[in-house]
Amino acid sequence: MKRYLLAASAAALVTLGGLAPAWAEYQTAHRGGTMRLLARSSGGTLDPQINYTLQYWQIFQPIYDGLVTFKKADGNKGFEIVPDLAEALPEMSNDGKTLTFKLRKGIKFSTGQELTVKDVVASFQRIFKVSSPTAGSFYAGIVGADKCLAEAASCTLEGGVVADEAAGTITINLTAPDAEILSKLALPHASILPADTAAQDAGSAPVPGTGAYMISAYDPNKGMTLSRNPNFKEWSVDAQPDGYPDVVQYDFGLTEEAMVTAIQKGEADWMYDQPPTDRLVEIGTKYQDQVHISPLTAWWYAPLNVNLPPFDNVKARQAVSFAVDRNTLVNLFGGKVLAAPVCQVLPPNFPGHEPYCPYTKDPGTKWSAPDVEKAKQLVEESGTKGQKVTVVVE
Image 1 (cartoon, one colour):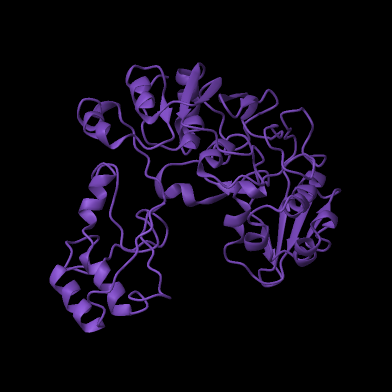
Image 2 (cartoon, one colour; image 1 turned 60 degrees about the vertical axis):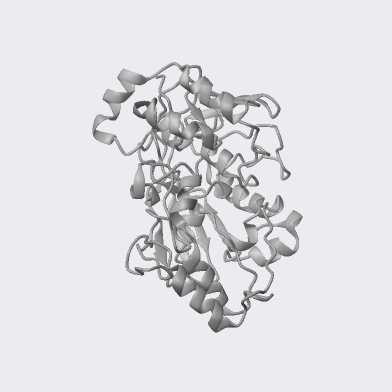
């Protein structure tokens, strides 16, 4: 059980997936014990339909389920959409505007209450009633969503999310085809909760879920305890596999320095926050055999205000791109083992990513050296040489 994990996905650790042929063997050999996670602070509300942080979205994966989900697997396989509470991916009709799901039978919430189609309808209504951060951006295409966005308290999504109790189906009707709808339904904001869940931010009160774990204790100033959902029975190793540890203890309040030391001593297994720069060499050399890395599909960037000079001039913006030494930036994050350069919106290993760097010496490569002479040339051509620039660091 005890492993030194300095940069990984909590969901992957708690519910390793994509191992169907050897799953029973792994479970027998590794099931049990306590996993200790660390973070500087808590991640906000426990409400899965409101919280919009990476920290708790990782934790929500083994606790909550949607009609569909992202496959619990490493690498690019983790972007695959698989059926979760639904028996299969939806039947599409009406030119892609109608999706019909068949709900699985026998699934229970951690309270022992059986999942029904009524819970599904109420959960979609609740997205709007609690003003979920993505209600208007991800789910506004559902029929009736416009009324729900205008008057959240009386949201019914009439004609948009329709349940057939006899058939055990849920039909979602869209105002227009949406190529990303399944990805949106796989996110925590579309978690299916008990129909009687209050239509207000749950705050620090755990909401029952259908996943392998449940939040059994929580103090936002101290920590969170996940324990096994006594009513959970694995229905899909790809969607919601049974977990290894019996308990996941997530402690808050340590500094990043203290977290690294605790993991090195075997007192903890994983940390959410980035390890301090002054510890990276030590981690990457003395403890390299104990480091497990799962790349984060996120990127850091320097936005340029295109409404103010000098960056309202395209050549001035291009000059910055040519001048940036991406290798130095990567070193700030611990070197090429812990970070990768990128010259586009999509990070490496993300669907749609293409390895090219247009504003460098060699545009056709994943990364190449800066072209300082080209940058100087563009500054001259732009007529912006000597203009002052204000840099805001947050």
